[in-house]
Image (cartoon, rainbow, N blue to C red; front, top):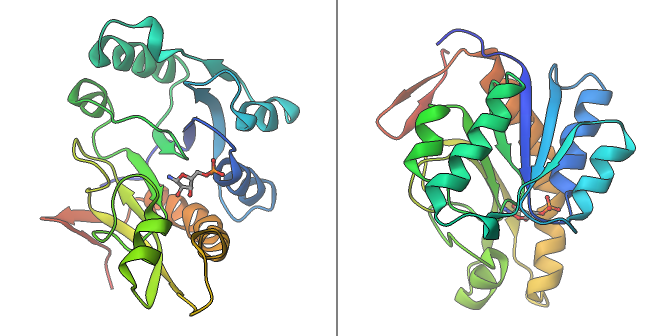
Length: 205
Ligand code: GRF
């Protein structure tokens, strides 16, 4: 695997705090990359305003305007290709991506998820962990495949679950770990010294 092109496309649906963490890491020279575009499937996503405020190109693509997932994903991929994006970073993008999209960006789509995958995939992962009664949970950055929150794992961080936690306090403890490991994982992936062996992301020792 040679080093990837360092142009990022960030896909969001909402708040955009992980987008902000990526922007901050780039501004602080902790991440050698450029955000070429931020795309949201929701016009009201606060992350769009964060990106616009720093002059980053933004696009709103309404999935409801498309008859099927594939036609939406084709448009999404073409907006990213147009800007020569090399790595796609999902940051709270609330849609599954079809093979149409994933084949357009092979091994080049990352996601951040607020649990220690493979535990608690899907929505409300922090609440799922809290309800299950686990004593440790965390955050995961992984490559995206066609299954939900299931691709090869690039980075994880653990967070304790305290006896007086609520799903909200637990989520608030996990979020800074997402913000810490996502830019680090993006930097590692962009450096290109890794391969995927089965499910394992392997870096040379
Ligand atoms: C984060 O918890 C992320 O792990 C999950 O969705 C949330 C997005 O938050 N996939 P934000 O929009 O980055 O603030």
